[in-house]
Amino acid sequence: MNFKSKLPTVRTTIFTIMSSLAKEHNAINLSQGFPDFESDPLLIELVSQAMKNGYNQYAPMKGIIELREAIARKFKNIYQSSYHPEKEIVVTAGATQAIFTIISAFITKKDEVIIFTPAYDCYQPSVELQGGKVIPIQLQYMNNSIDWNLVESSITSKTKMIIINSPQNPSGTIFSSLDMERLEMITDNTDIIILSDEVYEHMIFDGQKHQSACLFPALKKRSFITASFGKTFHNTGWKVGYCCGPENLMHEFIKVHQFNVFSVNHPTQVALAKYLEQPKHYNLLPEFYQKKRDLFLAAIANSNFSFKPTQATYFQTLKYSTISNEGDVDFAKRLTIEAGIASIPMSVFNKNQQDNKTLRFCFAKTDETLFKAAEILNKL
Image (cartoon, rainbow, N blue to C red; front, side, top):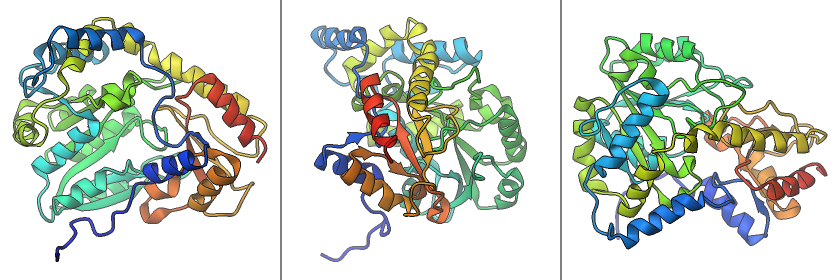
């Protein structure tokens, strides 16, 4: 059959490649971002109970009202910001579906979308599928700071959207309040939409605060916020997240959502609505993951890797330039095959595959797994 690919340059994702390689060689998998420990037994029991109670058919298209109200309360409790549960919140099949739906609803042929690299790998293909063009702006190595003058000069009459990700995957850095204020100023009095990917909002360390787009009034009126219960509550396989935004933007979001997914896993929504009644279930996460970060870094303190403790997420980048001159993709593959530990090479997320000899490791693992990983890394 003759056909023209809409994504001719897209290949198998690096996450699939490295996880498959880890499985093939029985390596410790610190590549893909998922925990190797179980979700809270209470939450699992709540899902089971919801199934037994008959919540096994289609949920409402926007999500059950109890969960949307719980999400609204969370925003009020954490950020003193409000979203209307009927008009401004939709439950989604994970954050990635929310991101794809936002882009599908607004990006058309020749529209330009600014992203910051290293960038999560779903952004660019989603834009290109709609005929849009990605304008990548590389974060400045090593501190991953943003050149806001470059951002401002990159905005044209074709700029339709700016995608931000804070806390940032894969770098583990966060946008400061000054960053958000500059973004607010740059986009004021424009028609630019902000897509704020805030999946790791509850994983910020060392007493720092998450600067959500909803905290900045002029940004909030033009911003979508996407989030993930799977990342937050250690059950990525459930694929449940949500999207918030002003009513006029959500109206367009819903048009696509209803024909893309329509509705999301019903018993899981029932369980999450009940689980969110206790704010401690997300308020304790920064301490929980900071302990894992600190344990991992203490365990490799005498290794030949260099690093700066990650500010957020459950990813830590390690620089290996004193160990090898190999490209990061080749080095990551060799570590998986020969040393028995899998990571993610950072160049695949960078503009023009910029290679800084850096690998990303996921520390959302049991202490036992982290100690075993450290033992391998210390021998390199």
